[in-house]
Length: 73
Image (spheres, rainbow, N blue to C red):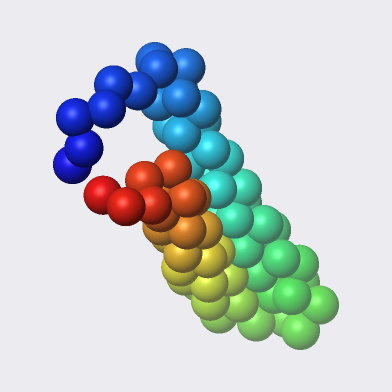
């Protein structure tokens, strides 16, 4: 890591961005899965698939965001 001092607000922005990526994508995946389960009458199938897809999309978005904040570290 570099010895450059970072501003505390930058750390708060990074943490809130990570939180919004993870929570938002998981919630969208769960609600889309529930909607598809109601439409196709397959109760837990699309809920689990939507949860896993939302979680993987959230982790991918989180990693891109962290790479954006720390490009050379």
